[in-house]
Every structure is written in structure tokens, then in C-alpha cells.
Image (cartoon, rainbow, N blue to C red; front, side, top):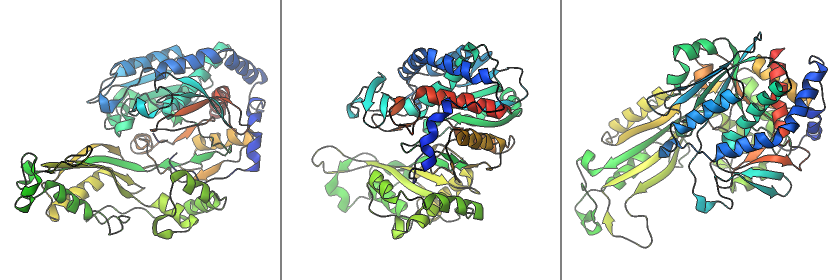
Length: 502
């Protein structure tokens, strides 16, 4: 998930008013709607948190074939328990998904995108067991739950479900109808999301929606919230060089002394990789690669507005870097982040990597690659260009194994789905910042692209961090006046649903 790979903001004075969210009753809402629901949220706090802990204890990891179809069946149960009249597990060529609908008899219908899968983890790297959801006190933040999936995305999704429980518990009808699509392969690039969304019954239900929302935890510790209008696309793949496929080099690992007379598949891969980018590794040089769309004036204005708030030194410290590409100044570095595609080496695997040396000539080497895409670029075009490039340069034997990916996504700032977010945030005393697109990725293209052409975005107060990393956490009880705890996050979803109904 996407969820935020780059944050370059500093505190805004208005952010300190965030706690007013729970006390404000918008003039368009019936007075008892929010009071009664808020009371119900408080009453149900413990059961909602326990529901999240139980969910974290059942990790579905697509890369490891772990807990399928159990994860999908549990997701369907969570939906039914929250009031969805029907929740069906749908099979794909990969991991199953869930399609659920809640008909409240409302005039408007809102789509929801959930992921029930999580990233892999190594328990040895965690200070708190990743599946036990222990409460941990974090100085300056408050009481948090630590666990795999805590913020990406089970915590925010559990908070959204808690909002549905609270509205129903308060004796209220939901102000909008809901259509839920949940997948179990987001963490491997959503290779079968289209098989879920474009099933006739799912697509027909989504066509009735004003847009599609993914629950998130959008507050940073300074209380500032960014409304992100899209995300880069991504291609995840492996490049495999092997003696058997190449027809040169060994068919099995052999003694390294034989390098004097035998070709090396590992060097073959390295030489191929070197043709993909410029000498500094920062400019894509793949022949015929699709061209990115330049930033428009509106996008440049958004970036300039955020960049002028500062935060450069904080970000350098957070990432452990001393300078940006080409020693670019802060504004230009942000513009490059938003406008440029990337070819990144996630990992290189080949031969012996244990302690000491082992004098072998490996018969096989693999590069794990991700390629980020910006608007006007298509995943299919990028992959086709890569394969043609390798063939043209004498590396046609190198296997290109695509494991997942999708196109970029964009939504207009004027879309009602986005304007409702802005309205709720401003009512809470937050002046949100607009940002063209996340540098990370999520498969929103299936909603924003043809044939649905819907608005899509992330929303939710609350805070968490550590997605894909050890000690991932989600705030339950906040001691930071700029950040909501779990109940505040739940209430933000209640507010958003009522705002969308207007």
C-alpha cells in the first residue's frame, strides 16, 4: 500500500485545533447524529480494538501463500458483522477477493477499496512480536498497537468498520450505501485486481458510486494532513540470467578458477542492468520507453506550496541521505519526485552470499526490479519496451518475469470525493495540503481508468508508521494534541460518510 512514501511538511498553526473534530456538529447534520454516534464509539472502543488485534493475528501474505482462503473468509465475516447484507468471497487466478454491499436506502453510494493482505516480516527484527498486537507506549505519541498490518492497512480499515458498528449501534441508518472490494494481493502488485473489479456484478455496483475511498491514517505527528490526488503506477518483476537459458556459462555452479575459460551469467546480468539507466543510475535509457507527462501548472503550484513550508532537513535525517539526485534544491527535488518514472533495483541475488568466501562461478543470477510510472505511462508499454530493449542489446536470453503491477492513477481536486475530504478536515481545524500523487503505489487505476472512470482517494485521521518495516504501529490513545487516537479516527470516518451524503 501505498500508503505515504514521502512527506515534506512542517507544522501548520491550524493543526493544533484537530481535537475539535469530536466536538463539532456540522450544520447539515442532525445534532443527535454525531453526539449519539460519538457516545457509541466510546462505548465500543474495547471491542473495536480487540477486533483489530484478532485481525492482525491472522496475517495473509500472498508472497508466502499464507492464510488463503482464510484471510478472505475472515474479511467477509468482518464485513457482514459491520452490517453489509452480503459479502462474497470471489476466486481469481491468484488469491481470492471479497465483494460486499450495504444497501442503506440512501441516495448516494460510495465505493470502498480494502486490502486484507500484509507484507512479510522477520520476527527477529521486531522488538514486539509482529502478530501479538501488544500495546506499547511511545514517547510523544501515546499508546500504540505494534503489529504487522497495524497501519498498512488493517488499523485504518478496522477504524472504518468501527464507524459502521457505531452508527448502527446508535440506532442510525447509514447516510450512504456502500460497495466494498477487498483484495489479498496488494503487497505483490495486485496482479488479479481486474478479475475482481471487472466481474459484471462488481462493476455494475461500482458504476453507482460517487467514487472509491481507501481508509488510511493521514496525520503526521505535526498534525498536518495531505490530500493526495493519485499515485504512481508500478511494475514488479525479476530479471533472470542463467547459463541454461543463455547457452553460455555453466548449467550448475562450478569452481571460480574456471572463469578464465567459462562465461559468467552473473556478469551477463550486470551488463544488461547497466544498459537500463545512465551512468549515474538516475535516468532511464531503455529504448522506446514510454514518456511521462510533464507537470502542469496546477501540479507545480501544489508542489511549490508544500515545498515552501520546509521540512528538507527533517526528511534527509529520516531517510539517512545527505543530498538529492544531482544536488537538486528542495523544490526541484520534489518536482522530480512527482514527475519522473524510476527503474529501481530492489535486490540482487546470485551465487554464494554467506559468511566468508566460496570460490564458485554461479550458474544463475536474479535482479528484483520495480519500475514506477507516472501519468501517460502504461504498464504494458513499459514491459514491452524493456523486453525489446534487452533483445536489441544482445540480452534476449534474460528472462523478464513480471510478478505484478498496474498503471498510475489520478483524480481531480474538484471531485466531490475529494472536496468532501477537504470539508471534513477544514471543519476539524486542519488546512489540508493538496499533493499531485503519492510516490508510492496502489491499484486505484482500476477505479479511475476506463470503463469506470471514478474518483478515488485515501482518507482518515489518526497516525501510524513502519509500513513494510519492523515495529509497524498504529496509534490507539494519543498523547500528541495534533494527532487523533483510534476513536478520533473512527469519528473522522463517520464525519466523512455524512459529508459524502450531502
